[in-house]
Length: 113
Length: 112
Image 1 (cartoon, one colour):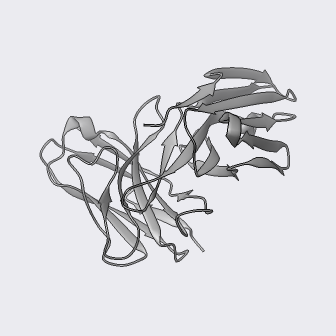
Image 2 (image 1 turned 30 degrees about the vertical axis):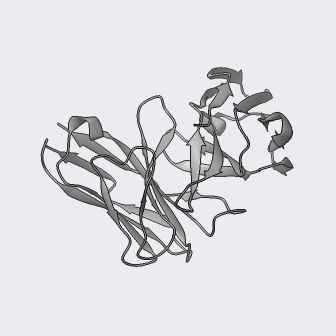
């Protein structure tokens, strides 16, 4: 039982390049989330999904797209990376809406030059 | 949106000392979690505690939802306790999800 895993762990992009971050969970959780963490701050919600085939915007969605084609996977895409997207990205999952905690992956450190 | 404040922002302890970290939040919440972010950046779940008191080894937590605060107690601190402690409160999103709003954390350093 690996929990929540993220790929890749590190990435450096040039401005304007695109990439996809992969999140996978093996706990059969319905809900999945993408957060970003900037220096000296807590995490902020980018997008989330309440089940396979669903996605919704969070607090800071601009510049990102997401897809949840399979229940166990949640993808975060950057179509045209900008330096302001330099951050550490965390994926999380939870069993249900209420009464269950969110579990976080190890994070992806992204630098956009 | 909801505001989450943590205190103190920084804390230095000698190994073996006890400490209390506080989390205040500005509105009613559905849940509350405490995390430890270790020096390698990993977020470790400590407690899921929307109300009441829980204990896990040297750590314990209490949430008083009616007064909108939570406390994390660390007893007999060890150097491995170093890192940042985050409080995060959950609110229901329009789309049905559960958004966690994080405080800015307490940076803890435990010295020998």
